[in-house]
Length: 104
Ligand code: HEM
Image (tube, helix red, strand yellow):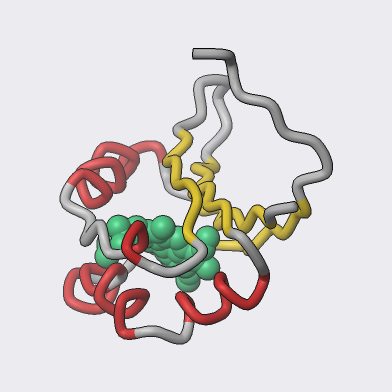
């Protein structure tokens, strides 16, 4: 079964649009990595100030390889060149225990 790795980023409300805009011009390199399965940027709609960057991988090793890769650094280059948008970030780790997609 796959693994889910979520970066939970706290973003002040006045900078939420800026975060979404940064992701709109994200590198898109993550999808080229071996073992990559899915990415979603989840914006809060219940008054929280935490955005979730959801990623799903074939294995922990695949996730670790992405984090150690130039693609990860490139995917976060605005963080280095334009400074952080977030005030905090936390990595959440899960195993997928069950999974089902809607029948197409
Ligand atoms: C200090 C920790 C982190 C912060 C503050 C952060 C924030 C950001 C921001 C603002 C972007 C948009 C691009 C940019 O501004 O450069 C981005 C890209 C991204 N982040 Fe993070 N991030 C962090 C670590 C992580 C981790 C541990 C994950 C793993 C779940 C992750 C997943 C992603 C993904 C998938 C992208 C898009 C990259 C691509 O399209 O290739 N981030 N992150």
